[in-house]
Structure formats: structure tokens, C-alpha cells
Amino acid sequence: MKRRVLSAICMTLSLAAVTPVSKLAAQQTSDTLPTLINTCLITNDVNRLAAFYAQVLKTKPQRVGDDYIEFQTTAGVLAIFSAKAQEKYIPGSARPGENHSLILEFRVNDVDDEYARLHEFVKTWVKGPTNQPWGTRSIYFRDPDGNLIDFFTMLGSA
Image (spheres, rainbow, N blue to C red):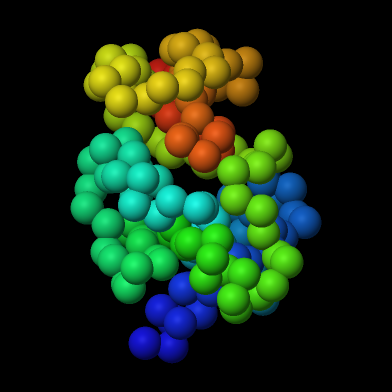
């Protein structure tokens, strides 16, 4: 229950370590490194955003009251929290629907299959299937609040 309370007010967001990715890959897990376990989106419409992510992630969320929903993934939790409740717990800390600096990235088996599947309900496309210079094939689209999402496959692994 304690974890849910902390999650519900989106305080489980950990800071990223300042170590380069190549060094992180070589290191073993350490209790001294922060571990990102939860990403929380603040929204004015929890149900609308939850319905969108249920389709995108092909999974049902776990609802914890009217203000909080979470999606378990293999790497952590994507949480959706109401702006009204966020304001109650941490006044002035968030403005929903104004994110322009974060990309939610999800590794998928086949980007092109996902692109075809997502066309039924994704309204805003940023970039169709493209091989990126950093070794991924990606699609970029926005959720109903304008958050940017990247579905990607490592080149040579699909």
C-alpha cells in the first residue's frame, strides 16, 4: 500500500544517473544508482488517456480510485494521474497537456505491424516508420494530451 500511495502522487520518479550509457551497460546493478520504476503522466482526463494507452500497450490498466491508473510493463510502470489530484497533493507542480520535452519510448517486435495497428485510433502522427541513424526503426506519434511516443525496433532484430 505504501508504494501505491507514493505512486499515486507521482513521487517515485527517480533521477537519471549522469553515467554514460556505455558505462551503465557494463556496470552491474548497484544500490547506489537511481532506478527509474515509474513514469507518471498528469492529465485533465484520466479515462480518455487510460483508454488510449490500453489500446496502444495492448493491456488493461490497474485502477486505483478515480484519479490514478497504472499500466505494468516489463521495465516499469506507466501511470496516469489526474491534474486535480496532483494539485491537491503537490500544488503548482504540474500543467497537464503541455509536455514538449519528453519522449515515451517502447521497444516493440515489429514497428511496421504496430504502425498499421495503431492507425485505427492514433490521431496525431509525427513520423512514420523510419530507420534512424542510431540503429532503430521507429514511429513517432502523440497521445491525446500531446505527449510524444516512440515505438521502436532495433535494426537487425526484427
